[in-house]
Amino acid sequence: MKKIVVLGSINIDTILNITRLPLPGETMAMHDRSTAGGGKGANQAIAAVRAGAETSFIAKIGQDHAADFMLNTFKKDNLDIQHVTMNEKAGTGKAYILLDDNGQNSILIYGGANQTITIEDVRKAEKTIKAADCVISDFETPISATIEMFKIAKANGVITILNPAPAKFEIPNELLKLTDIIAPNETEAEAITGIKVVDEESMQRAAAKMHELGVRTVLITVGSKGSFYSCASHENGFVKAFKVKTVDTTAAGDTFIGYLAANLKSDLSNLESTMIIASKASSITVQEQGAQNSIPHKIQVNL
Ligand code: RIB
Image 1 (cartoon, rainbow, N blue to C red):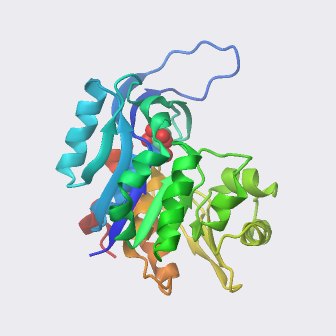
Image 2 (spheres, rainbow, N blue to C red; image 1 turned 120 degrees about the vertical axis):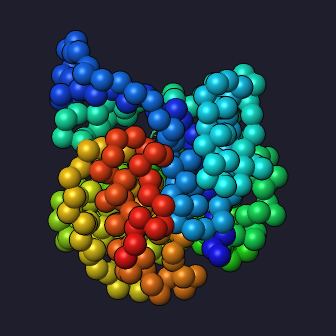
């Protein structure tokens, strides 16, 4: 069984259903609201564990009801939470998701406890990181902690996967050099490279720029169109997305990365077939509202 370690955020998502996204200064009525478990880190960890990988999670919660709710979810999924620790002062992370009738969203984040993860927290998980096949991180927790995890991973031959979300314009070169696989969407790819991603040719240019910055394998996800891959060896290709009716795109990218990590061989020789599996899993996630509740189990992906 694959062993995966995820370092990342935990959020309680409040979903606000609205007809369309508001204009600046506009007051609008919402037609429904609900809550669900979320956070890019937690979503990726749940995707990996539901894909069949033994998954450990490094994260921080607050001392509140939100934390109890999230810990219960993790236990139900058999996620290893020995490295999920509590910050008594900051609250558990929150996300406020504006979801329109076409399934498109805008997300506002309160980092809270997620922002208090330290290098020391990562070092305490050193043994678990060393024993993993693959580690995953994102930008909803401090970059210093991600760099520390990737350093330990690289020194021990563990594959590093970076989900560069939410988009950041300044990513330390040190982090990119420690990254084996980066998986931005088109907005994040543009933030990293300055290249607007509109077609396969611009994807190739953006990927070339990321290779130049030190990343071995680049995957650019372009929503309902599919995902592009480019390897430093110049091999590249495009995997089309499954056509489904989208209700909510939240956690689609997280599902893709969790499933990818759980199925990828250490020499990446099955990259394209793994992207097809990851894309099928994401196509299931987008058919239901909410993040963690919509991430499929392996049996549902059934390819
Ligand atoms: O990637 C989706 C996630 O982003 C949501 O679950 C929300 O919590 C934000 O972190």
